[in-house]
Image (cartoon, rainbow, N blue to C red; front, side, top):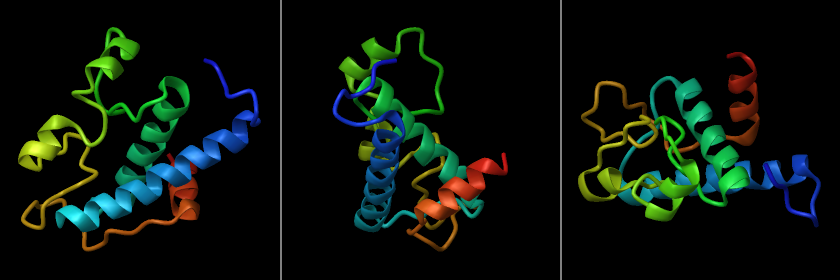
Length: 122
């Protein structure tokens, strides 16, 4: 794993987490989708997106297995929001759920503190 030379790893990871959190909130609002009723799912996915952004330079879907993550990033199919989400509103990660989905919550917001707290409990 390479880290940016100008920022310590922890600081860079914090920026990516905040960036992914803001992205998720804006995207949910723009697409009329909601976070999972179990916010621990939302927290884990956002944290996974942030880690992939840190490691790979792109928010590759963290809920899939890849033989070659770098190759998948270049294809861009599974970069969040992935093609199935953009085209059909189908989110494999359960980050962006349509209101009629049984697992959809009623919120499009999550704080960084909630993400960190929920991920520590896992």
